Length: 101
Image (cartoon, rainbow, N blue to C red; front, side, top):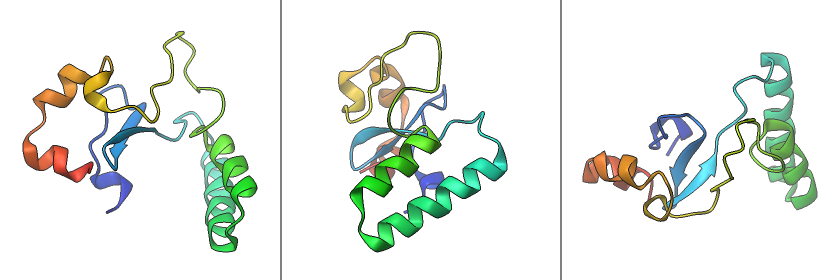
């Protein structure tokens, strides 16, 4: 399933994949930087190079330091119901929640 089809939090910081929150790409990235990092990520995945995958995810803002600056902690890897996003998660229909499983 494409990332765009997964449930995304209202603050656009996370999407739900395999039942857990995954950090979204930093929306402030320049398009050229985002494209370069996505290309590096795809190449690293094809090469099965975990270090290069992590490097590309950090460049995208999907790993490493969070890209927001309001002091909110990172809930990546958490089940939505166990985070401050629990109320949002409960507003989704069963079909919408299933898209994140």
